[in-house]
Image 1 (cartoon, rainbow, N blue to C red):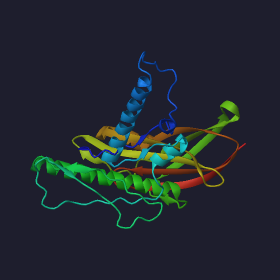
Image 2: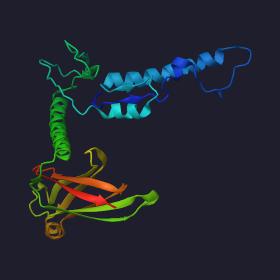
Image 3: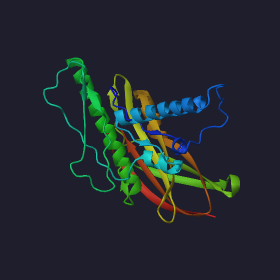
Image 4: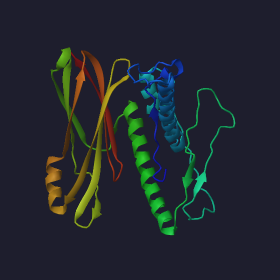
Length: 279
């Protein structure tokens, strides 16, 4: 909770507790009929309460009492539409104390829910408060960049703020599939770098997604390339550029390949789509 980490949990036992369907292989305690089953049930309830408490206290989602684990993992991924609310408490004393927090909707529309932590820790001193503010600023910047990538990935609009080329080839894959090998090349000359001493820093993020003919997302991969170069190494980078390779296993069909590339300094972004047919 101090690190503001959100944890979601899933109980894979589904409805076993409600039906009493416990593992028959567990040992019976001799001379005490029913004791083993009671102990097993208590153990299961304690485990479930831990999953629930961790999720609810950190603002996560707890999926339980449902045998559809695929739906459970889908629920933990998050809703495609969500809003993030934040607030800055006034007159907060830097005493390191825990402050409870309760968030609720005045009116609860259908199919909407709120996930919020049960509270937060105040900073211990002024220096810690300033450090947390800097950390939050970095987090906000990263969150904004991630949302920008997500929006660009699901959009069909092209953007060419960075010079990126995309190539690929098909080869035989396992089980009647074909392997699509993609190579993305970024011309690094337009990149700007953060200067730290003699080092030049930047991070380039490549995201490639595959959509089917119904425009459903089939697969996606993400790679980050951290650039940490001396001045003397920049010319070699400008000559060779940045290259990443990704592989996808696809069944025969027609697909839309969507590529998004962005950098961490200027947050320039390139996004484009291309259609391929897998025979």
